[in-house]
Length: 166
Image (tube, rainbow, N blue to C red; front, side):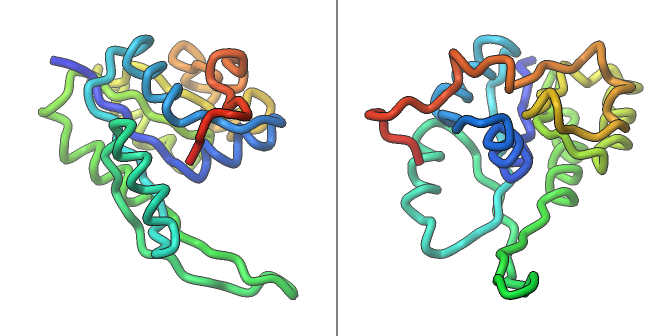
């Protein structure tokens, strides 16, 4: 039975950007397949109608998109789009438990601590891919034996100018 990846897209994108570079999503799915034997990669993402072309590209790379409705809030003088995907990621990971060998969770968010503990106890955790080695939740340090840092893979996963990236 092959492995599934469950990806917190906002955490991945912002974590890598905070490390000073931009992720190439096409290279990332190849990395997940090659390194962790991932058959299916669920990408949890907030839905914004204007981003339909982006969603098409991501699906073309092989991601299965799971959308969360978004909403706008004011932060000072600025409007910010929010779409927290945590509940959807946990729900899909647990309800698909019988469909995959092991799970690869992609996040640096400590809110997933209980999910990671559950998967480890069930012997279903393959890896925790943390976007940024220097900026992730202290709660995830309990899983150090499972952690891979995307930020240390910059040479192989960085978007290069001249290539189209969503």
